[in-house]
Image (cartoon, rainbow, N blue to C red; front, side, top):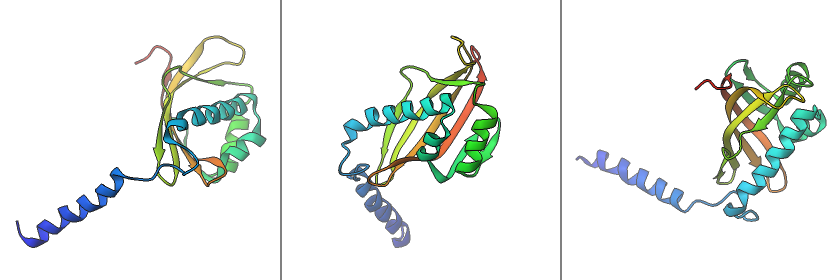
Length: 161
């Protein structure tokens, strides 16, 4: 191996060594508490979603949020997202977390990544009619948690694998 080829692995090893000792989300939030914290935020988020509480949704979403949906495309900001909720969700569908599917991962100096499965039902109906997967990047600025990026995907009728 020549000297050029030797330097790149050393540089990469040094860069990734720091990753092994990466800082957690924020000094005030132990990683062990993160799943419960994100579960509370998820509940607040989808209580607002299901009740068409656009004021709470506005507070939870960053102004420049990106929302990617496998069936409806990309939403580029909070205002577009709120308009889409009013048009397509309010009074038409409710989101329900699929129990036991939520995973939460700390993202050093950023916040947390939430991944899970959910289903959708008509309001007041017990059975879901559609299922899907999601991932949400929650940003934490030291005081406030907000949704920065959302991927909502793998939507299909219940029972389809």
